[in-house]
Length: 256
Image (cartoon, rainbow, N blue to C red; front, top):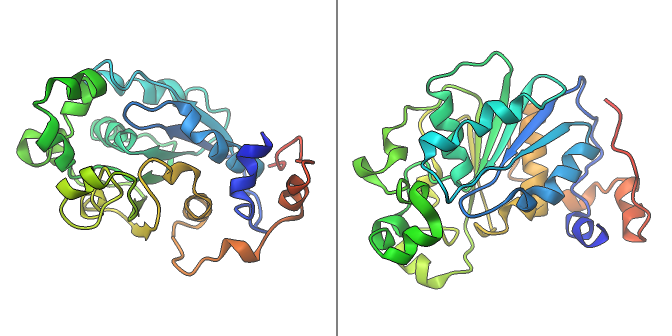
């Protein structure tokens, strides 16, 4: 656990926990698992949130069939309202489900690297047989333009903050993508009509969920409905996180 916590030293800024019990559902991306949210889950639980990680077989079915994970996960929330933090395709699942549902329990939403306009990677490689074998039918739905599912979704009508990465670990994919990108999705593609806030960070698509600044901005948006480009998480380290440096981490999260 110590190895997971050290990279997020400083993320738990000296801020108050939520005024009342609130829940976060975290939804991983394509070909990932809930483990990608392990550190963020700990961070948000320490801040006083209840957290549910929605596990779903992202490479085994189409998006229309995968969305049942959303009400199933929300039903596990012991508190209200329910916020969502999604990575990559997880955001498309949420948008697809919300186009036909208007739940009273919905709080704020943060999407990390979402292909809201699809990905040119799928346009370029989607007809290559190994691509479907690796990414499944839902992956093929992430094309750009009218042939892709994202463009057919309506504008968002909920409080949404989007964080886009600008660093890449895959120069080959970045050569395919037009403009600034995170190795899988362009900055421009993360945008969607109706969003409340958009922020660019120097992070990659793969590691955006474990990045300290990403987590600090997620917590800020869920709490205040805004991002802060000038945020400096290194200046406000809580005593609890300092204790983690020497391996004595708090056993219990903050009380609500």
